[in-house]
Image (tube, rainbow, N blue to C red; front, side, top):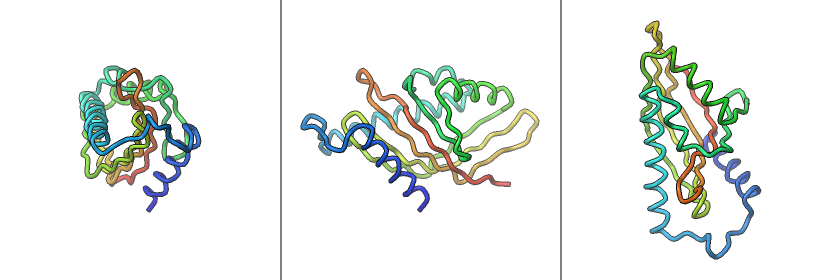
Length: 162
């Protein structure tokens, strides 16, 4: 239910920011929706693969310059803050693993897609200590910039496993 409410809030927010009505050229048919799903999934998978290699800088090409993220405590982060945090964090990790359980898509326009992702985050620190969020819930938005899908919004919530 919380994930649904987060998605409803995000969609409302995006509609306010990008406008309530679609222009004729923005209407999306099923074939376009299917293609958008493939393209956005490819970006999502690429980012996760890079993070599992603990190489945050390589992921930058998939982010929009106006990227924003919100943490469970409500704190807002811009792109530079997120990249700095990831770089510092990866220095302390021996491994990081993401496992996807479920992905739901909402294609808002031909240039804007929102996904809700459920999965598991597992980090193993150099000390051997583990930090696991299971389940992990993300609401992510992607926008098309110069023909490429860019990651532009993230909201995370999750439950720590002890």
